[in-house]
Amino acid sequence: MAKIQTPQPVRGTQDIFGEDQERFSRVVETFERVRRLYGFKGVEMPVFEPTAVFARSLGETTDVVSKEMYSFEDRGGDSLTLRPEFTAGICRAFLSNGWQQHVPLKLSAHGPLFRYERPQKGRYRQFHQLDAEIIGAGEAAADVELLCFADQLLRELGIADGVTLQLNTLGDAESRDAWRAALVEHFQAHRDQLSDDSRDRLERNPLRILDSKERQDRPIADAAPDIDAYLSSEAKEFFAQVTEGLDACGVAWTRNSRLVRGLDYYRHTAFELVTDRLGAQGTVLAGGRYDGLMESLGGPHTPAVGWAAGIERLGMLLDEPAMGGPDAIFIPLGEGCESAAMKLMGELRRSGISCDMAYKGNMKKRMQKANAAGAAHVVIIGENELANGVAAVKNLQSGDQREIVLDGLVEALAE
RNA sequence: GCGAUCGUAGCUCAGUUGGUUAGAGCGCCGGUUUGUGGUACCGGAGGUCGGGGGUUCAAGACCCCUCGAUCGCCCCA
Image (cartoon, rainbow, N blue to C red; front, side, top):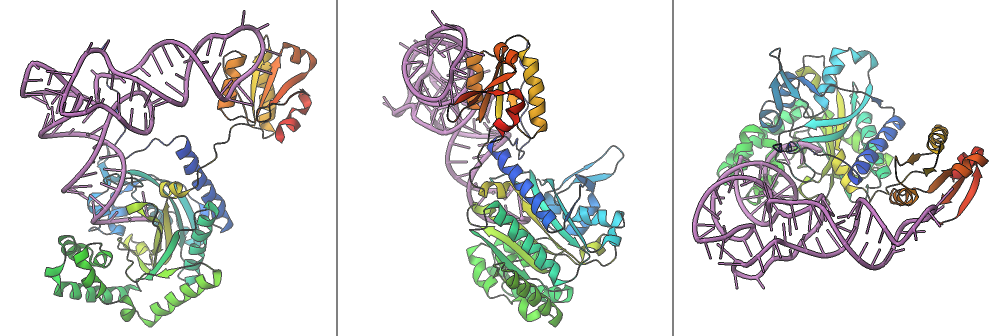
């Protein structure tokens, strides 16, 4: 028989298993717990949306829309896109379902996103994010609360040290437009001194020149006008409320006036949580205010703030996870013992005790497996034990073994 | 999309200036006799050297293409 070739995984996808999976689920579980503490409701969202949902809201000229989306035509001829981010889809859902009635609405989601990029460590074509949004709140308190949430999440994950919150404001629409015009003028004047990349950015996304890493761009970017000079008094006041709120809550932040966002919908607050432990993929959580997004989807003016965090990136920062084994592993030996063990395991599991049993093997094999699985105890049930209504329980750590009445198993294993 | 490095057993790697049947450690499987693991000893399986083409009497080692990973750039979480 001709050997068929084993299919390759799709480039940029991951099969997450073992320790990596442990990290992944710890991030998600912590997020789910903390999000409830802050009153965020969960949402389950479609993985694909009409292409227009993303194309309109993110901005046609952004890299995400112009070259990174997984877009395709379905059998009905509609153009669909695998979500490259959460925010746009959540806003679409908000409008589709009339969630205005719940405003202000705190929502959280997590799951896979898709972007056709060159894979690297911490950057995949199918990657996973946590997402938190507060929709229908134009108050600075929403920005503050959202950042407190982010701060607590990192603390509970034990990775707050070494991660800094960089904060900036992009001002309201007028401020942003005026500043943008001034930037374009400034960069236009030094056009021939800019790097090729930045000359390109000047057309597509001039704000991005500000945080260029290109050496030759730095003097020009550093000399560029600051947003501060263009902020309306309202925008200035808003940013002051955010920073004062953060200070009051004890959330540390640093101003980075060169921090901008790549997507068009951002206004006012923009922030990133950055670490130096992940190389080029140092941004672990980022977001900002997007007061203009709903309108770009044809909805009413609806102020909102949100952030997203990379699950893989957060997971990589976590300490070595302890791979815990089950509380007990059963070893049945002899006639009728296997079904008795199965029944006992059912009772223990209903009492919240984790246990397992190998499907085959002699005593020695099963002991080895129990040990390798990191089990706390081994429960041996042979014909003698069964006849006497007991089980031999061995503590694999200490090596102690004693006979326990079957009714007392829960107690004996619960330690 | 651009540049660089790399790709040998499940994993981490060694394979001298191209030269006989490609190695180690860990892991896996089995054994050191009866219902007791973690240690030790013995044995075994497992690789068309990422894939394809080329140079050569001879290639895992050299050249080209391709796929993939990693690191920058870009972008972004």
